[in-house]
Image (cartoon, rainbow, N blue to C red; front, side, top):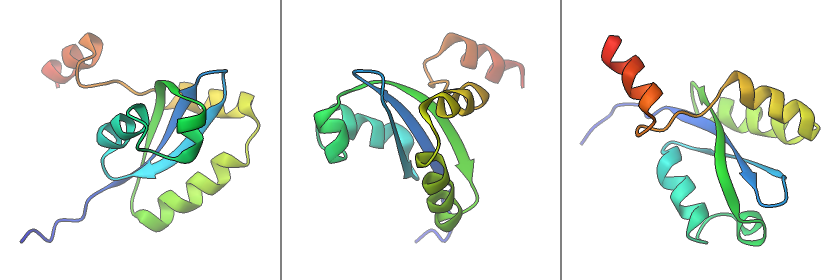
Length: 103
């Protein structure tokens, strides 16, 4: 049994219609897939996800929950600014792959 602490993340999803959903998870890619398949939050079932905008690492669940709460209170323009500062790069993104190979 592993005792390793899993990192938590706050993520922002752009939904159909331009709204932004904010959530937390230890596995953002799996959680995003759940949102896409209709098994995520009620909000994303009513407002289907268009793309994952940002992923922000947090030290623990408590920190992630506090950050999620603060982000949800932001106006949409500030959420988009925050997303531009923490863009999501998927593992299949060629730019991310090129950066990883240089590291």
